[in-house]
Length: 229
Image (tube, rainbow, N blue to C red; front, side, top):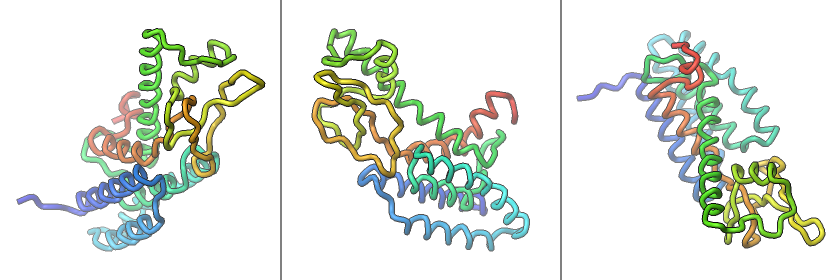
């Protein structure tokens, strides 16, 4: 029979929170604050189940130094308010939790998540490159430089029926131009125009869940790369 200690219980609750939030985010792109309230309360209860409450409280407090960073990133529109709240509650629920022997820090989940979020860009570029090799004119009617077109190939793709995506194009006279400005995930409107270049509005919660799993299994990716264990 498997015996669960407080660390494993924290990890299970963290996975339950992130898994639930991710599913809801994928389906509706909107997460109720009730999730963060419930699991925030659970993190408080778990604190009183710790063998050494004082030491555990200091651990949570240290992990929560990530809060100002994620709030700043949210204010700059790099991800949504729900993502910021999720990261803050996660820091209290499972502070710097890992099942590996590798080093972690309060910023490990943010770092791992950010690195993971680059993967869709690679997929976009491969997808667009295949279309070009098939001699499809994916930049039809665009008046743009080659460098900007290459950049757009990483950011998005031409979608016939966009859903949960942000437009990457604008009209200047009769010609189309690429609009690669940063989209605020909380305020930008989703594109509904057919046959348009878009960047997918993937829920960042997916990458937070993935970043947490990576932290559990391998620790902090950057710290591992530079040899800190």
